[in-house]
Length: 192
Image 1 (cartoon, helix red, strand yellow):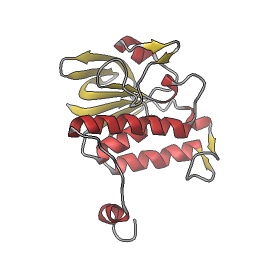
Image 2 (cartoon, rainbow, N blue to C red):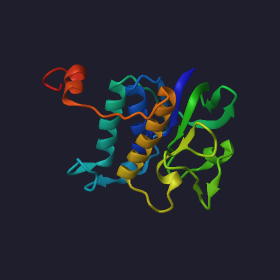
Image 3 (tube, rainbow, N blue to C red):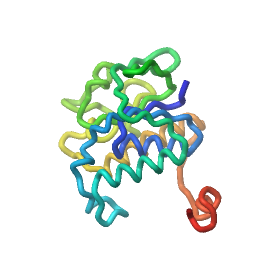
């Protein structure tokens, strides 16, 4: 059983997965590669001067893979349900369990609806930490914002969800703030 299952591999899902896996929560990502990022070119993503959306995704995937995320590329989640132990996720190839669920499926809100999440009009209703009305289930990015779809906002939503999961797990407010010494420890003195 994983600690966290993330459904969706765009900026929101990969951001959530990076934070949780980096901080020792076993994280699984299911990604059908249907993200709008393949149609984007990033000029307004802080820290990225100009980059094709598909190239950005490849960089983000390599980054989460480097931390050991169990990423299932091109595997569709067909159903999610809440259980007494957490969440049961059904994919084309089998069943998976986790304590926490992060939905990052863009404007497709079908899984949130089948899970029983409350909606505010057409969007999934979440609190400031991105938690839905279903305890320990989070919704991020375009599924929680009506016509406010932007890659950097989605990545921030994923990070907010991950930090709340980490705070719950650690029993106190958790902050993921790296220092140059952390980079030296992880990647060596040259930042390789």
